[in-house]
Image 1 (cartoon, rainbow, N blue to C red):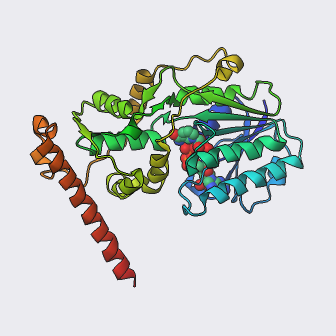
Image 2 (cartoon, protein in one colour):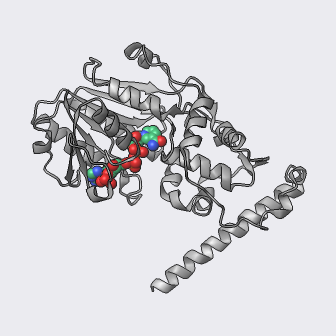
Image 3 (cartoon, protein in one colour):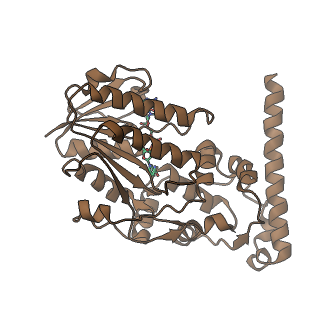
Length: 349
Ligand SMILES: NC(=O)c1ccc[n+]([C@@H]2O[C@H](COP(=O)([O-])OP(=O)(O)OC[C@H]3O[C@@H](n4cnc5c(N)ncnc54)[C@H](OP(=O)(O)O)[C@@H]3O)[C@@H](O)[C@H]2O)c1
């Protein structure tokens, strides 16, 4: 039995990990800015209120054997988020240097090291900072398939809300999602694995799939009919306002992840198999099915009803006229949205 500190324990990955570590008899110390909002309670769980950017971390680390780093501030003001992510990792690394700590285990993002979007660049930079001075296992994962995982919920919301499945070059890029249960197994097993220095471990399910095909998979498993719709070739950034309309509850995160779609997020080496030969990640369809079965969220489109009725005839949606109608409808949606924003700004003045 060890004492483990988790930074980011209250988040999606952190909550599942905390439960698993407590189940295995470990003591867990967690830092959270909003501990009262977190319902978990256990005799071996100690939750400390604090912000990693300002809290005294040395005391919290003085008795711990290993640290999980899952802090994620993607929803912070976008101008500052890379700086804040790096600063919080640096604070942890500095505090960890002053105590005896065996290992830092960090979960970052899967993707190449070059030409990164700011989201991926920030994930890799955090790993680099933590691994500079400590033994650090940096897991890199693509979309995590689990109920309440932001990236999974966005996929589900998109499949439910969009009357068509967009076809665009950036949706042809490959990814390799991972089942949440497999991810947790890797994270927990990492406590036992001996590594030296900074070790990057890329993890994913058994199959590689295009992002667009993932949307098709959700639609198929949810019994939704979503004809393919060719998106005119435009700069991806021009489509960002659409995300405010289609994914209002995820809009800031969605915009950052949307720009990451240009990168393949696939496993490129066999490190995971070498270090964790006993873990056999489940197949993609089984992972998606399990996530959908456990997900209770519903994503009704605010424009449901008659709005799309002209393209309800699926053969029309495949024609040039049908595609023009879809574009017109999407324009109407964004215009409506822009007007709402302008009105809100006027009211504030
Ligand atoms: N979810 C996915 O699909 C996915 C996929 C691949 C990789 N990952 C990686 O997995 C890691 C965890 O992701 P997640 O989805 O679990 O994130 P999440 O649900 O957004 O959780 C973020 C956590 O960070 C904590 N946090 C943020 N700012 C903080 C601050 N200033 N001080 C203290 N704590 C702070 C939050 O705690 P409080 O709000 O309680 O303070 C929360 O527990 C990230 O590195 C992410 O890149 C996730």
